[in-house]
Image (cartoon, rainbow, N blue to C red; front, side, top):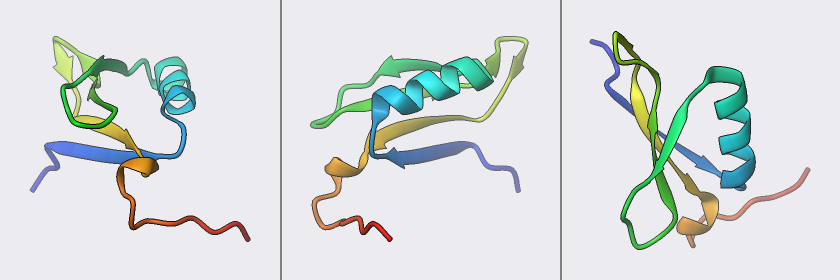
Length: 68
């Protein structure tokens, strides 16, 4: 079985976008949700990759982070 979609949850969408756009040439498009969410397109039209999405940790109010 091959993955067909992935979701990333990050603390800083702007930083994540900058990193993945620069390093992997991913493209981000705002997606209508009740919170900040972007669809991610990977690969090229002739060699598509696995597409996905990204949202912030703030979208998950029950989630907490702990610094070590």
